[in-house]
Image (cartoon, rainbow, N blue to C red; front, top):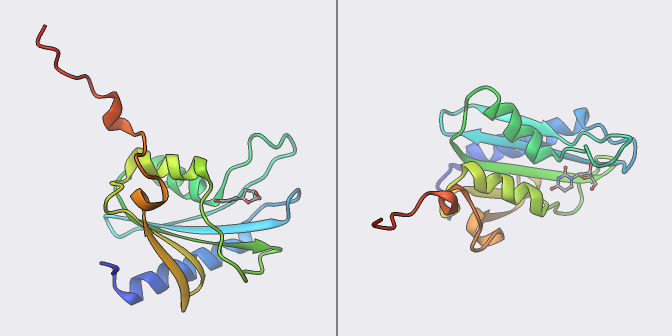
Length: 148
Ligand code: THU
């Protein structure tokens, strides 16, 4: 059960759908939009941005995270993701593995919510820990006391 209100979930999904118009996909034609809700209430939109050299492509989710972090915002509650060929959203588009890892950097896996959506009436909801079990994160790099 979502802790977010239905209205907030709908707002996130609508924002993710709205971001599809900015998606830059001359190579795949597969457009993805994301809307990232920060704990301060701000919603950061993101779209995928491709590149002729392929490797520098950014997914919509990472675009949203890096927009927020680049403005000093590093605490988040949820993200909505939509996508489809030519921006036609008829199936669910799940975050890629790299984006799940990026979520792991700043989000609590036991509470951060991921909404994989088609529209405001059709979405699947996961916790980050469900789509990235036993994730490796900043906590793994904390120095452990050795007693010495
Ligand atoms: N893509 C995303 O933006 N997010 C995902 O989670 C899956 C994949 C983009 C990357 C590329 O521009 C296009 O979808 C096809 O892989």
